[in-house]
Image (cartoon, rainbow, N blue to C red; front, side):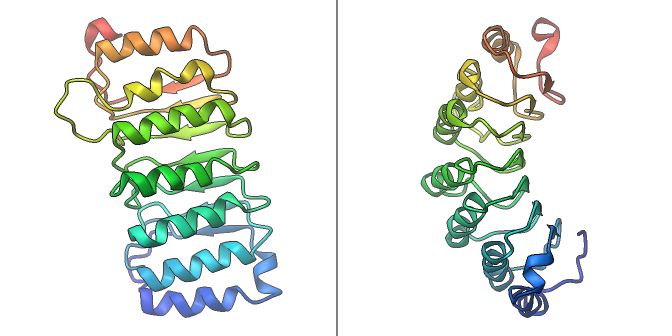
Amino acid sequence: SNNAMLTDRGMAPFLRELVQEPLCMSLKQIKLKHCKGLGQMAVDAATQLFQAADNLRLIDLSGVPISTKLQLPLCVAVGEHPYLESLSLADTGLGANSAITKECLLRVLSSRTIKNLDVGWNCFSQEVFQQLGAQMANVTELRKLSIDNCAACTFTPETPVAVFIEQLPYAAGITSLSMAMNRIDWKTCLIIEDSLSFNRTIQSLNLSQNPTGHVGM
């Protein structure tokens, strides 16, 4: 993690070597957080590793730029992983193509094992938030979700994350939700108040660095 010296050319062969048994079977965690020198070859090799390393429990790719064409194969791999519990795809470039992002989230949230998911610092449209909210009703294993700073700029005053918040009454298992820095104002706070009055699972809510104002608070 946090190693700016790692390069795509250097890491790709290393990750491919880890795919071989018995090495891949001993891996429990893969942390490549903020290794911004990684590119297409390393991400592709990492995807192959995720498919081979059945005993993985944690994957952290936050801050690693993932090209649009590699996002879906990677999300399919982690969504189908048999034991993965924690996944961070924060600040990876999700959201550049809404159609692909929706499919990526569909695949990731189809996981029956992921309990902790961070997709913050990506740019989600209202369309993406709408699907994410709709999926919450069918996701029972996920406990902690972070969507910090994901609200895309729009020409309307309402933040795109509002359509996600409207569907929180149907969220099946989430206990911790972070929505910091999503341009949530006092009007959106009223939606939150209404939604949480019908939700019985959320115990922790982070709304820091939002322009809620005195009325919203």
